[in-house]
Length: 320
Image 1 (tube, one colour):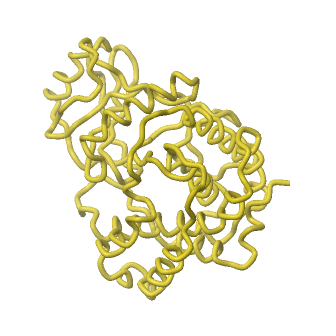
Image 2: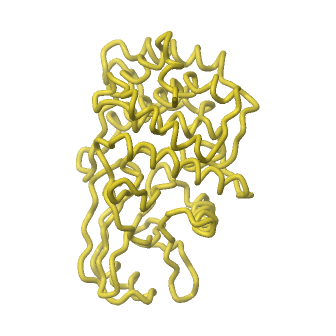
Image 3: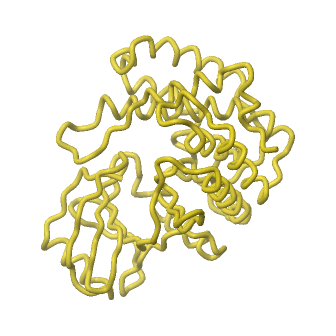
């Protein structure tokens, strides 16, 4: 989450007047994240998230996201509803941007999850994947393997971000291009289930949020992304075995992976690490200086990449 576009009070009042949610009490920008402009909106009828869609979210994809959340909510997954106005419209326009009002869910996102919380997150991911097996929609993964070279080129000289990074990325792109798997079970995945996109109360998951990278891809790749984001130290140098086992245990309680998926996990995790390394490097270079946004350091995902490249990387996915 972030704020790139500011909303005038009169425009906000006009937007809120289309809904049965009362009148505006307050609206505060949310600085975390990097993708869209987000505000915590409080009205006389409750709390909501107002999201204005920015650079990486195409207006044409918004009906997919609304439909996806409707499907998951119908399968009893803890996802926030897109609020519809009195005429049934979910996608609005404000300040020159497409926008949605989104249900506010109780819970907090974590910075240092425990093993028990990792297990709960793994189970929630598995439950979501089971629900998505029956989802008929789809979307190209614009941040998937086929697009990583373009992201790297768009970032410019990566050595400006971290010395020596360009050579590492070039080598890794070649390695992954030669070995990226095919034929693994696939459907729509979340593709960004970091701890800040999961709300929890204690050890219970109360919300899975921010589906704006959701796309069609391997379900095991989604698990690899979650593994990379939930089980490492803040600097990315250490994978916590207890947290990693717990995450895998929770997921496998809901989903049985094939032998091919299990064998592919270390490579998929290398890809996940490279994907976030590249997008963070890109944003580090291109984020506007005056944006109310927290830029994310790419170096912890370089450290993860190095760990997943190690000869014993398969051991990181043990669950017993």
